[in-house]
Length: 90
Image 1 (cartoon, one colour):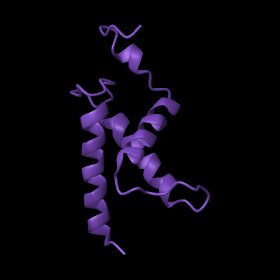
Image 2: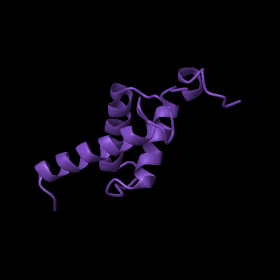
Image 3: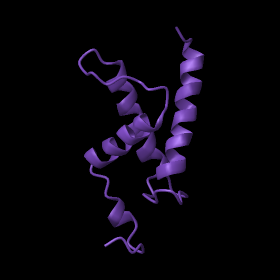
Image 4: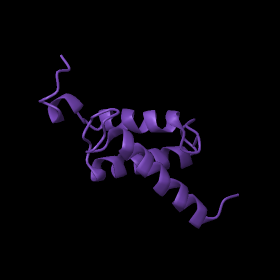
């Protein structure tokens, strides 16, 4: 079993990974989510992974974990189209 320090480091690295994809400076998926929005979604995801009431399991920060955080952002009402009005996405 991982120590609390190891888990915290893993979660910190995961947040960085999510921010690379969906953060303000992302060129991969320019959602322009703020650090606060991403941190909140990551925390919700961490709690759901720890809950005995969900079947969600931590995938050690893989792409499925990242996509689940993206889905949480959407569920929280995040609208990447509104934040990216200058993009030609329509």
